[in-house]
Image (cartoon, rainbow, N blue to C red):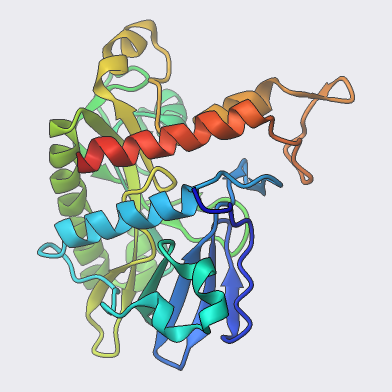
Length: 301
């Protein structure tokens, strides 16, 4: 395993932005080099310790899904090698963990699709029997499979948590034509991915997609797609027992880290979820890395 990369430092290109995981650099005016670091964020706080191999796994998974779902929606990959736009000394920072992509006009809507009731969706359902304004049948439980996948968008926040919004709000933000196209495309992407993953023993409970518009105004799938950072993956073999108990099924994301952070004490008190994060112990780092790796291996086996 190569050395873990917490923060990239590509000095030959202008830095556009550092996200929770990705560092984006401008390549001319029409392309972006996206470098997936090994950073991990939980509760919107970036951990000080990287998860070795995470950036490479995220990139492999995103490339796998981009290739598999290209017939549903065009994506932002240029097909050019990321190594070709940096200096030889910088190649180790980008190799295996980067995508060279088209620069698009981002649409400020997180296209969330849920096939199961979990997380904030379950919380909202208990209060209103609906999620983001979508009414749902009575009697659903935590981790229930929904009658059909639902589109539950969020407005992209510049910092912190994105805010769940109704479909009507999305129509106000971007217009009815584009809103419908994003909703229909997102549900189709989710259905195809969920069917494929299920055949590999993985449930995709929910996921989020991001889209942009190219210079011709065409819709393009961008950012990352269907990774454990943007999707809730559950192994089928743990699902039924957890569902019967009303528990969260075991998952292939950073739930492991979240659970540890919920239990940790800082000066005798629970951590208040503000920076700095408590130091992650080695066993939590290694178990999280193994979870990400297992998700990729099951999917691509």
